[in-house]
Image (spheres, rainbow, N blue to C red):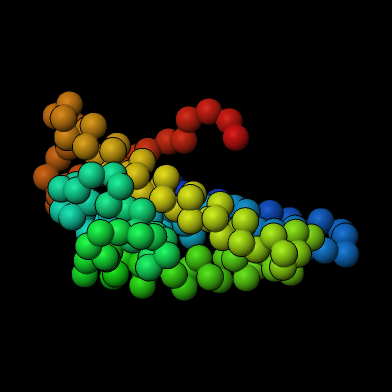
Length: 153
C-alpha cells in the first residue's frame, strides 16, 4: 500500500484565517493529521488489528485509563505511545480557543473517540474488501488510497 498516494488524496487546503481576534481552529489540519496517524497505525499493526475484535482498539487509544482484565498488551502500548503525543498536542491547541481550558476534557474525549472510529472504519473497510475479494496482495493494495468520503458533515 502506498501511503504517499493516500496522503496526497487526503491533503486539504489550509483554511484562510478569518479577520477576528481569535484565529479559527485548523480543523482541516486536525483531520489530515488524524487520518495520516490512523493509516500509519493500520500499516504498522495490520495483522493485530485484523485478528482482534474491534474493542481491541479502545485500550490502545485510551491507554491505562481503560479498565481491562489483562491490561494493555505490547501492541496496544505501542499504539498508545504513538497516539498520545498527537492527541495531547491537538487537545492543547483547543485550550487557547474560545472553548477554554474547562472544556479540554470534553475535547480530549471527542478526539479520542474520533481517532477510535477512524481506525475501526479502516479495519472494517479492509475486512469488507477482503471478504468480497477486492483486496490485492499487500505490496499492491491501493484500495485505502482511493477511498472517497461519502455524505456531508
